[in-house]
Length: 168
Image 1 (tube, rainbow, N blue to C red):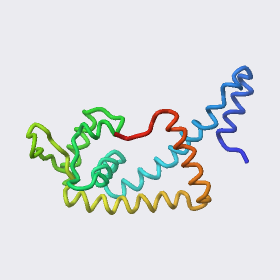
Image 2 (cartoon, rainbow, N blue to C red):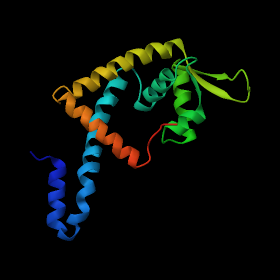
Image 3 (tube, rainbow, N blue to C red):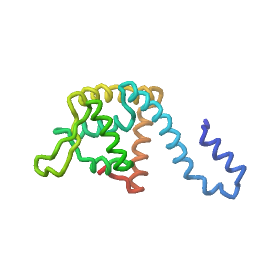
Image 4 (cartoon, rainbow, N blue to C red):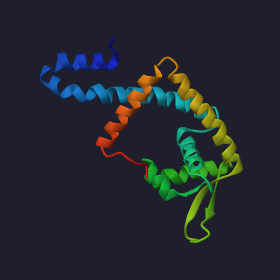
C-alpha cells in the first residue's frame, strides 16, 4: 500500500533522479508532518468545543499535570514550549480574563509571579482533557494497538537520537 509520502518521493525521484539517495529522511519526516496535521485539526476542534485554542489547552494541561499547587512561572512555560515570552503573556492575559488562571506572587520570593489554575480552570481542564483522550482514541480506532506502541517506541528512539529527551 502506498500513501501521499510515497507519491511525493516518487515525484521527486522522477524530477530529480540525482537526489533519490537523499530522499530517505522524507520517509519519516514527511509522515510525521502529515500525521501532525491530522492530529492538529482534531485537537483544535476538541479544544474549541471547550472555548479554548490549542495553546490555552496546552497551558491548562501543563498546569494540571504539574500537580499541587497547580502553579508555574512563565519561564517554566517558555522552556516547555516554542513560543515567545510575549505569546505566553498574551495567552495568560486571555485565560485570566476567562477566569481559568490567576497570577499569584510566590510566598518566598515576592518578585516571582506564578500562573495558577483557578477552580474554573480545573473544571475546564478536566472536561477538555477527558474529551482530548477520547479524541485521540477515536483517531486510532482503526489502528492496531501493537502498531501504535511499536511506532511510539520507534519515535522515542529517534527523538532520543536527536537529543529531545526532556521537556524541562
